[in-house]
Image (cartoon, rainbow, N blue to C red; front, side, top):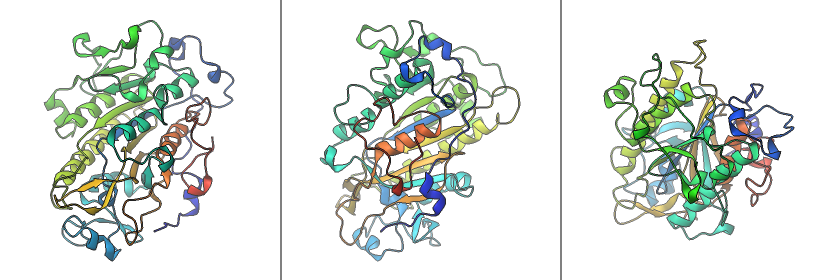
Length: 413
């Protein structure tokens, strides 16, 4: 099912940011890369928060084709009810709806037209269609097949930025930042993180933070598996429990206290729903999406407390990008779940986002899986471009063709 796009959507789902601000902290990087010289445009600004929905999120539960009678036929137990019914989808128009567990996101972003749902996103067939986690995840992190490093590393290197611009959460630096050591300065970056937005933040306890040392290098991407805020503090700020909330609370603190931060990577696992996926009322996916929506709205509200205060802690533009390694099959299986698929849905949130549903829905009468009609790298590149990066240059996505404007998703490079 092709979705007609309003004229304003054909110019890109992310609005350009005014990049007239100077590059904060650029002197800490050392000698800039050739790509950073003579830009002629403003430097990268604000913060991009990339959240990987690990396991393959089911796109037909996120964007619900409730008006298509084949939907309930192919998913007799898993189909989300139509809008207006109990536990029904949130009406998005054109016979499509949003999973009811995502209602907090719709209330905060959708009504102000800053929630974008991009349909048919995935790894293109020409780059391997085996539907296995590892190769699909490597493609997502590397920004292509058989790349020597992470796509974010190439982006930062081209802009002359380094470890002071990134952070990731987990037991090691995120794979998006593989190979970042070549762009680093020979000193350990320092970040201050505060528990409360209205307090002067103390420095991070070095016992609870880490700097990777891959390949004998003195510095890698900044990363941590620590939770810097106490549970009671997170609850007071509106965050639900869970690892994603811990990472987002720390991210909000860093955005307020470190103006150099440009890219954050977070993994949110648990979307490989072969069993007990559920419908809009209950099930594994409903639980995951509920935690996801509540954590994201708490994060945005947390940042909003310091916007426009005039005290120098305004976080600037922030965009949240949620992607997965693939989607899931159209038919449900015998275990109350879905098998691995191809295309799916990416979600983008923020002040700069042109909201609505973009891209193509599958043919529920003919398709086994959702075809990939939007290369996942285009979503990554559009998000980066909206913050002043130049992803179409410097070999960042060298295997990706130049933007096809007819998709209605891309910014001018």
